[in-house]
Length: 83
Picture (cartoon, rainbow, N blue to C red):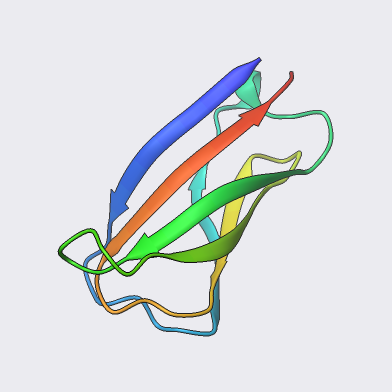
């Protein structure tokens, strides 16, 4: 089982209602055998006012997220899958 827990800090404010494809790539030896959904949370600079986002890890290792709203540069990711 692979557990991924991380915080991403972006260079610019995250645009609401936008899909970000291939935010990062999972190394080949750790990729899932089927596409997996991931828990993603966007927040403001004070780590409050969180909003749930949609994240997906594809079998080719691409990690993509869709964000409905965010007013700062932080994204928290928590995912688990089997290889």
